[in-house]
Image (tube, rainbow, N blue to C red; front, side, top):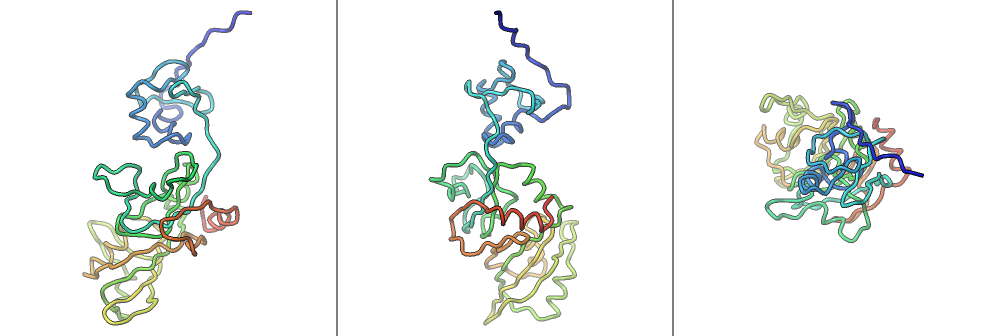
Length: 254
């Protein structure tokens, strides 16, 4: 019996997601890497080569292949990483610096992306996943998931200074505040603060303290919601448990 012809459906304008984003959502690679694959003619949609990364596709209906292999969503992966200071939170770095993906070397994983960022000089708890919906929910300001940091500063603040920190300050048109700021310990000319944020502005803690000419010596993220960094060694990664995923859900994650 003759086979039906291969009919390529053209997605309606605005429907679905862009092709480069689709490859990322399926866990194959980053959007930037997807753009390279598409430009090289290695990606087909409905059997036809596509070179436009902005083409809208429907993940539930369109057959997408890369180098002839059908791309399908893999199992969802949720990782905790103890990011060391000095690594950047990107897949590839034009300057050749180490990245958080160095912490995943030797692990048999599909493509995963960081959930938010820790800058090069910061360290501690970083989540990585191939579940973009889960990541977006965690990052959504409406979720108000607390992030807790232990911060060493080059000063010993008194109560008046802490009160000024808590009131916040306008920097570059943004009001920078924290949910709470408390002294953990102090000695000599330095102190460790515990700072809790319920939003994620760029370099928020460094900018907040810098507005008061306070030097940040170390910045370590120790918790996200009810999820604690715990005893995970620096530079190591592990899968989150079902109980830990539930902790994040109970922390406000949608």
